[in-house]
Length: 440
Image (cartoon, rainbow, N blue to C red; front, side):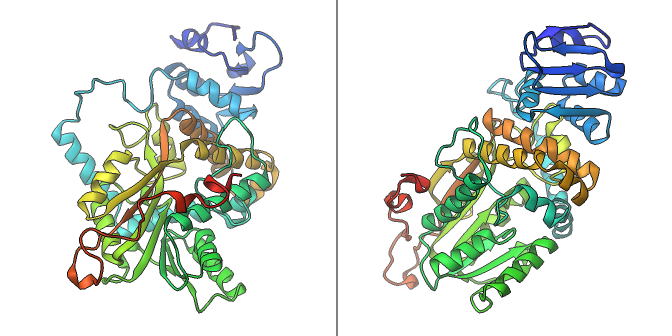
């Protein structure tokens, strides 16, 4: 990049000099701050306020994102180029892992974090937070999700996030993901299957229609509940599939399910509530049954959100109440709840490619999106989707599928003795005839 003009606040010129991404950055009044050394810019960032200039100079990417939501910044062009420039503005890894390995938060800080997490994740607060995120507009989400509106990581036949995925490839990748979850759970006709956080019903309906299970889903989103209820009726599945507007804490007290899936759900649970969450899932699962926990995890071990204001932006505008937990912590809590981890798979590059596909689809239909969502919401998602894609690309976040069981160890369980379950301790059944995720 060529630095066009040095200007206040202090440190701005040095920070802009780092940028190699093909972007044009303009300050208030149209002053050209950075431009490509050769060729046309692929993206343009226009700062309309001195406040935004201060945030740029300090490397507070989250605050700069706030400025875009508030209209103090405008962006055009390639979101990939823009995200590359944003990463170059950072002073340090937003995971915070540059601190010494011996570093640990003081006990009182850890205590405060736990209390805060507990307060943020009451049943009432969780319902408000879920509805804030998912009840924006069904039609808005439909613009950029696949036809089944699967709002979680797809599983592509090629995981490379630099390869754009069109609508057909995204739809196939989501079908492959749904089938992968069902295969990992070894779903069988007539089994009782619970989908916690059922979304718009993609997994619930796939499991019922392709694997013959008796499927029950729960959600806290009124919009999603109405949508899934309508699909169940339209497809003639009312006797075999159901969905309830319900908190997981209100599920029945006795083992009721052969298999359980939690996809994109435990991110809403919170660190303080996670032990009780997995105890609840164990209680609901029959001895020997299988649980799939699929969700976003932290890339680093010592943080619950991304730094440089990125996590604060997501909390304010997109995902209130979300907490990042490292997969090692999740597995520890699962084990302490009496669940045995059987298979762990990191799908991180798949989620990067999924999010880029969503971002590309939204950018292609901005006029329609503007009619379906408030301007601030649309602006927030225009940064949230590609920003998250970048975070998965760079390892700041990951997404893990953890297959676990409630081992059978009670003589009353019948012929199963010791710590037994349905898992064959052989991955061959997951792969199928066409290879991983359906790949030929």
